[in-house]
Length: 113
Image (cartoon, rainbow, N blue to C red; front, side):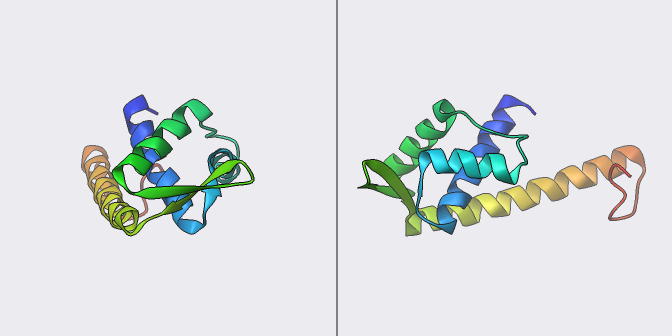
């Protein structure tokens, strides 16, 4: 996957995971690896800058528990996640339409099949 697209999706997935429950940065990495069945295991070097950016922008907050930062989503983060979800859905719909038109497929479930 293209690095820029990966970064965008990584930011989305990180915020989505934090929304589920307050969580440590390392646990975000583990959860992503589990959910992708090992296909996507981001490095700490890619996760922690995202967490720092989200915290600076007010989308998440952190507290120290057992000498580790625990991140939780803020109302501002909830709104940002809603906007990101809408954009993701629109992008997938547009990409699906482009592929259908390019391949001459007309059915809703014909992609790649």
